[in-house]
Amino acid sequence: MESRINFLIHLTIVCLITLASVGSAQEAAPSFPYVAEVTAENVNIRSGPGTNYYRCGQINRGDAVKVVASKHSWSHIVPPPGSFSWISKQYIHIDADNPTVGIVTGDAVRVYAGSERLKPIHRTTLLLKLKRGD
Image (tube, rainbow, N blue to C red):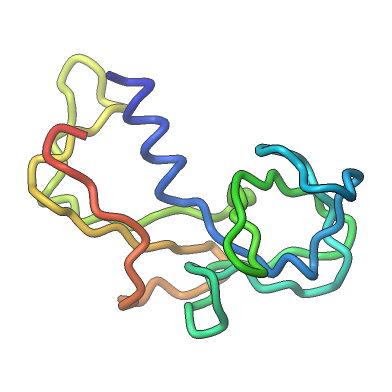
């Protein structure tokens, strides 16, 4: 259960960046996941695959990213340090036996991306909905 919770936490904070800003040692269609190198400065990480999604971080030339999927001209990456997700704590029950594990107590609980670089404000772009028991 703990590994599933940890997986879901990591999954919820995965952000997206433009594929044009990422280079890979593999030129042919790579299999996922793979590590790529950022090829531009001040590349915005976004909460979804498009510029209409809000920024949730930034990376620079030479940074390595783990690409786990792609959609159109966007790469789905594991977020860099300093990125995180927000979820209302009213829908989380902390396990008394293991206080590092939280279990979702609501249905379709919304999760939003955040970053230490941005002020924590409410955003309307939904990253994921978690189910009761996740």
